[in-house]
Image (cartoon, rainbow, N blue to C red; front, side):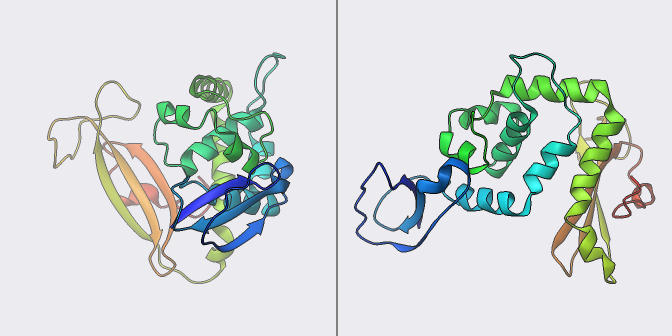
Length: 230
């Protein structure tokens, strides 16, 4: 089933079969309607409009932007909402690298769905913004991300639960922070990092992923997962 985002004030597509449909009231998307059809080959990204409405209603994206320690002093620099919104939009559409963000740079509808009036920024702007933020104060960045991460899971952790910890060894190539020669069953002798994943199986919820140096591959190195103490 395909999804279509159409401006009801400008276009008349004339679908032969539709199912459901809703009007959104987010920023300049107030005149857009979402429809599903089996008859027309259109965008597979129509779900972004609904998710943008969800983020706008609960204030999650606004809170993420307000707590972000990124600051600009130049009048020509993009606002931090555009930078963070581009990252969020890219992740929601499957981006795994900076280069993948170029696919949504000119996507006006998805930007408006996230209430980013001036549109997404380029991948270079995102890269420079993150480098600027991390170099300025890594401790504040870590606190900001941890707070945003735990905000969605802490209410569920008030009930008894079992936290399963799974450790994966990720071989590293080149010079990267934390890459050490340690236990590496697939690439013996190759530097690696240890990825510790905290999962609550009964909720099917991923609590956190902790990236450690290669020699910290034992589960005892991630006893703080889910505690909020970082």
